[in-house]
Image (tube, rainbow, N blue to C red):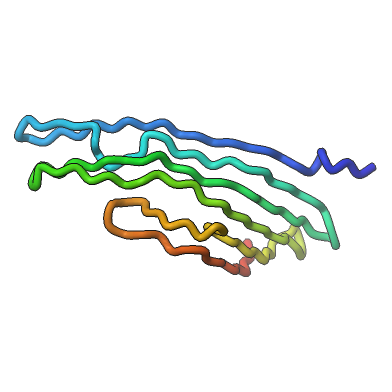
Length: 134
């Protein structure tokens, strides 16, 4: 008997991090450029179809704002937090399901965001992969 709830797996993963940076000049700060909270949460599915296994992952990736202090300029830079919507799908096939074809849609809502204070991440983008395990 097929029950959809047997193939749907919600998940969440969160990290809280507080890093203190100290310089030899006696200056110390928690504005080290590290986000206080990061999280990934979503829903995965897994189905056996056509003698293979099909997986999907619809998820959000979030990060809170961060600050970075520079002792050389005595300035603090703030990087905004963000949440992106993402989707990935993979089909495993062949002997022992060793072959995989995957497609991902990253940052579906085309949000402008940055991991650091100088480089913005690409907007909406797509990845396609074909791989094999040996």
